[in-house]
Structure formats: structure tokens, C-alpha cells
Image (tube, rainbow, N blue to C red; front, side):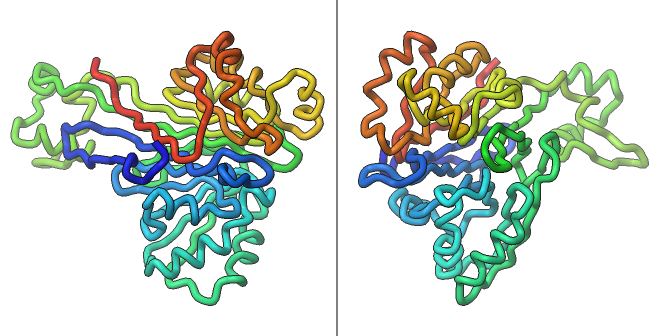
Length: 321
């Protein structure tokens, strides 16, 4: 699944199938390898493109996947170590050359404006506006078009955030409920689309015609951290979690703790205890040339573990009740 031809998305109209596409651009931590780009990920829902991190070579990974830089609306930075932001100036330059004109919103920990200003000084021209949002609290939620994103602080050497994406889902339409609440039939479909509809001097809302909300979709992305409580909370019941597995072997645990990283075993144990439907491991140490050699041992801890590879694609879709 390494080529852009595998990246598929079908926009859904009202009443159609809603989905999130997740494209893993790179899985390497610290330094890139000939067969592995630095860790980054692109999330797409409808026409909204959200890139997570921008290490050296991220624009190359995007081009390999035939993904348009021009369409990226949002960039989420986990933290400011070089392997996660070193590609930012080149990314901005390539966006400018792609004739992007709409706003790029960049989100990150405190110090974001300094990082963006430094990157902008290396680019000759930017035909688009950059809006920055500094995360000041680990419990704040961000509504970015169709994305509802909750950053959460993790345990690293420097301020670092994971990101939880939540896509809510309305309840089913209930004709019986609509009639009980005296909602005019001619605005039933409009309420389903717009949630709040004024009509003949009254305000009508979705709760008047629809059952309780159904289970939505939850996607979690986290790298560069020790196992911590905020991760456990974010992971609970996730449909997909992309999580670092910097090291595997138990003797490496000392390095993991000293460098504020996780082992694959810790990640697998988290997936098993948190009910994660699938966990994809990423951010592998450059000393681990082929992380797939650990697959069988990890599956002994949790069957829902996948070793991430560059170009891997996942599509999350609402399940039918």
C-alpha cells in the first residue's frame, strides 16, 4: 500500500458514508533511513487535509504519495525537535510553488510563533496567510472545520502533545419523535443538515427529530513520550491509534526511559488494556532496520498491533448499527 494510487477517498453527500482517510508518510524516528522517511502522517476528511509533523523530507513523502500540498489546510506539530520540524521551511516553499492561496493554520506547543517565523525567513515568498494556534492547556479542544481535535500533553524532554481526532455522529432520524415535537415535515431534511433551523418564528434543533447520538470515530496520534496517564485516557476505545515504538528489546528500556521514548512492548500493552481496535507502531529507532521481526512476539501481547510502514493507508468509516 505504498503508492498514492492506494490513497482513496469518496466524498459523501447527506446521508452518505462518512469516513476519515489516514496516510502514514514516514515511520522513522531521529534520522531518516534510505527506506524510511521521518515520522509524519496526513489525515483527510471531506476536503479538509491535516498534516501531523513536518520533519526533513516530508514534502518528498507527500509527492511520492501524489498528495497535493496545496490542499493542506492544517499542520499539527507535536513538538520542536528537528526530526519533527526540520522540513517546515521546504514544506512552506513547496506550498508556495503549488500556488496555494488559502490560509494554512499551524498548531503547536508554546514557542510556535518563533518556530514559524524562523521557517518563514527561509522562504522567499508566501502567497498564503499563516495562522498560528499555540496550545496552552492540555485539555483544550480545537474545532478546525470538520475536525474536532483534542491535544493532550505527553511525557517528553520538551513540551510535546499527542492529538486525538473525534468525529461525532448524530442519531438516526425518528419520524415518530418529529411528529411528537410538532416539527413541520417540510424542514425535516434541513434540520438534519444544519442542526438549528428557524422557521415560522420558532427555532428547531436536531434533538427534536433525531435519536440519541451514535458512536462516532476516534483516531489518536502520539510520538515521543513515556507511557503516561494522558495516553491511557486518549487511547481508550480508539478506532485507530498511531503510537511510537522506538525500541523493542527489554535491555533497551533504559534508553527508552532516559530518552523519554516508549518500547513496542509498552505500546502493545497499552493497546490491549485500552480496547484500541488497531494500533499502528511508528517512530522506530534507526538501529531497528526491520521492525516487522517483532510482529509475532507483539501479537502475543495484543492481536491488534500493526508494524507501520511508509505509505500505509487506513480508512475509518462509521460502522452500521
